Length: 160
Image (cartoon, rainbow, N blue to C red; front, side, top):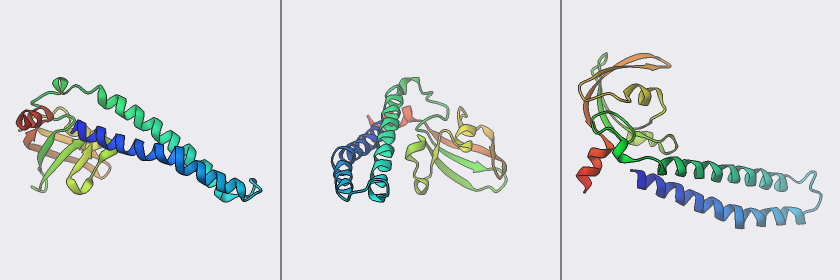
């Protein structure tokens, strides 16, 4: 999972760097050729995009740094944490749902991903298989039972 996130970040940084160094200077040059910069929307748009791309690259560099600090050996093998796949039972509705706890930047809701920073992610954090947990959501409190848990260390052990 960590390598997948690093690869996604690297791909995005590569695309943004190309845009910043090749495409945007070309757009700015063409906009300057149009003349009066005070009322040149193409020029303003290109400069705004340039600022956004620079900020996004900075954010991605920070994310890569944070992800590089994650040591799988420090992640508990028996409790919900980053990278865990958790099957929960909603005790009120008896509905079962499977979640994968991921970093906020790389959520795929269709795949059942939830952010570690989300209310559900925070509510499940640290729980063990068989535990009942209360999760505070904007729509009210939910009570879940951890039916099945596969932690990131367990997933990596199975992959080896």
